Amino acid sequence: MNLIQKGHRHTHRGIIGIESAIVLIAFVIVAAALAFVVLNMGFATTQKAKTTIISSLGEASSSLEISGKITAVANVPKALVNATGIPLKITSG
Image (cartoon, rainbow, N blue to C red; front, side, top):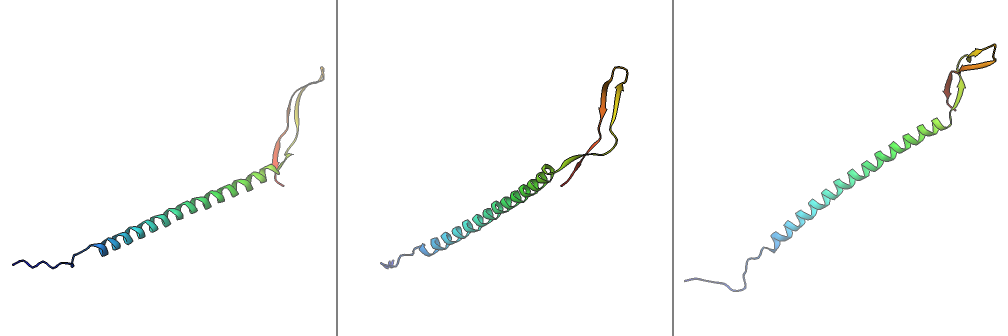
């Protein structure tokens, strides 16, 4: 004799809900990790750009200064200068 009770079906709705929650949590964790990586790269790029700007401003505001004796090679009878040597250095400020 087989007893079949009507109205008492076994459903897997509770298990499907838990699986959905686990997948959702996994998506949130992956999204948070990706956001962290993107923000970290943005901060690193900003810091690198700041360093480059500061160093270029230092170079742009520098000037040349004579750092030794000026020498020239000349042909005195013809009153011609063949070559001139001027030692220069970059000064900051």
